[in-house]
Length: 129
Image (cartoon, rainbow, N blue to C red; front, side, top):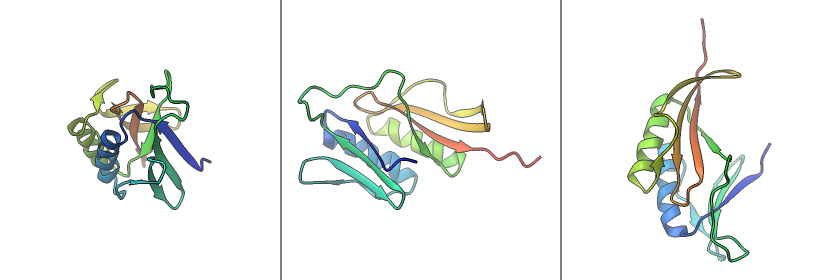
């Protein structure tokens, strides 16, 4: 559905360190900085990017916005969360755990990145009963 997601960051290097850690916990390679100073994480289905706002204003989080990253297991979601806390992120919402979603049970872990963007690791729990 999406080709890419780009979010604002006030300090690209600080944010790169944070996202290298949390995305590395999910098996992704470190991001790279392009000639314009933006940081990109690429895979076969799209891109996630960090950029200073082009209008010259400070980056800020979107109130009501959340970006979700898929986690293959609950353990990877926990590893993602721990890596984020250890690299400049802050916990938000409830502790990581199971919640009932419209499409079944979900294991969710929430963080705020160094700029304040709300992000989540999500593992879909398949109920085989």
